[in-house]
Image 1 (cartoon, rainbow, N blue to C red):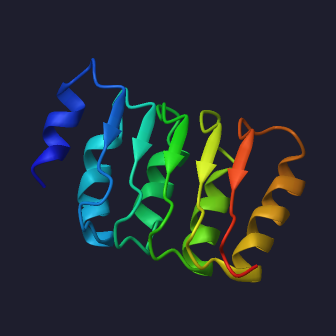
Image 2 (image 1 turned 180 degrees about the vertical axis):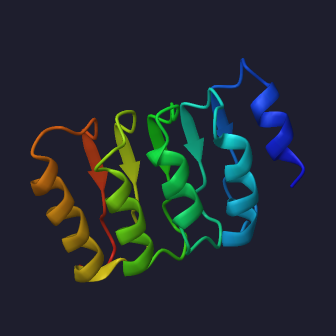
Length: 136
């Protein structure tokens, strides 16, 4: 709740590093209120307790989204979270690197990315997708 209003007003902020802060999904949801319309290009969220990515997916679906690199390694993302992220790739035109290593998206989560990436067939900005150590 504390960071969200500040992020929007900090026009010069392009990198936000919140790794290993014990943030859960509700904390991420609050943070996302500030990410809409921000200039953040690199968002580091590794090593938290994030599982629900619906709010982040909504940020990524916005035309004003500038996030190019998203680091979500070592969280609690399962298949549902992977599906939430994968679906936003249909409209997102900024995200180039997505790090999801050391979560638990499994085969179902990985398949969600395969389906979406086949559907958009090159019409996506994503260049790197890291899903190692995910029980695939």
